[in-house]
Image (cartoon, rainbow, N blue to C red; front, side, top):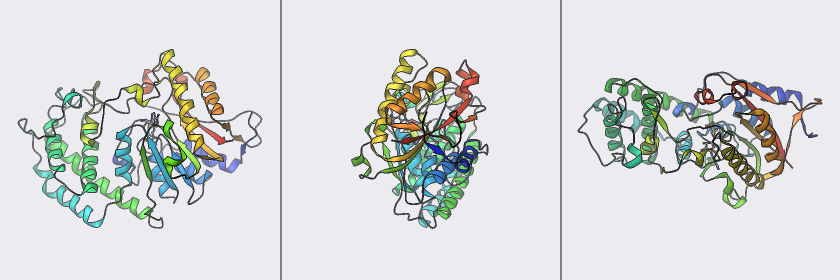
Length: 392
Ligand SMILES: C[S@@+](CC[C@H](N)C(=O)[O-])C[C@H]1O[C@@H](n2cnc3c(N)ncnc32)[C@H](O)[C@@H]1O
């Protein structure tokens, strides 16, 4: 067992972050519901307990950028990496600060263009999704909102100012996710306009809150966001900085998670988020999940990739730096020891609570996650664990 320990007060603070059950809110966190996002309180507690201002903090699987936001407002130099272009788009929008004139342009768009959005199934613009981008968008409930999305995109492509165009794309992405992803009911044009209007209001408030939280932070040191596999992490890729802390949540072994698709009419997969965000698509689910299907071969592949990525992460970290991660297993008894073995092979030692003779870990229950329902062993899968390691 590792001889590395954390004192009780740090352990307790981390535990309260792990167990925080508040609804996700604040800053720019509400811009998009990224699948399997963790709570801002978890990221905040890990960053506060295990790093100090001006430290370099990395999230190698940043998803919707939760840790990037929480770290930047705490004056850490944030580096985010994700293999998914949609993740980079979302994290970039959440951390791009709008100028006063950008905000004015968005408010004016909301007052003038938004009320004119109408259902018209003859409406077509060059932004029509082709090939797989358009698959399943003609299904019962989505076909009524598709012309509305086209109409908004048709206007956005004419906006020159990138932060404004991306902010509006982000609001459209959020609105279409609410209307399409996992929904069975049809959304009327009036509802769609109302939701887009509300989303823009909430996002502008979030942006104001974020800017206020950054008041004492050097805004020129904005987060560095990479769209890469974490396997490619090298010192040169991050300007030869040495990482003081990793806070992250990797894909989960054996879990069929859709990071890159929405489910239209409740179940048919759609690449619509890439169409709306203007991102490159074309990879299958395995690409975003370390190849991790629930088959034996899939799980073996998962552990191969996990070890390679963790070695690469280790190569950019300082010796003695912490690596904190939230993870779940669909079969804890076989997968947790394998995962810990991967971490050890990649150059990490697990950290325990001081004074504890048995290894203690921070577990939390996760109610109502849609992917958990696919597991047979609910006692394992309804829990996540925060693992704390040190680079040796
Ligand atoms: C559990 S999610 C992270 C969620 C994030 N903590 C949040 O709050 O939004 C895991 C992420 O790992 C990314 N990912 C999968 N394979 C990767 C790889 N080889 N390198 C980097 N990112 C990868 C996925 O695209 C996904 O966004």
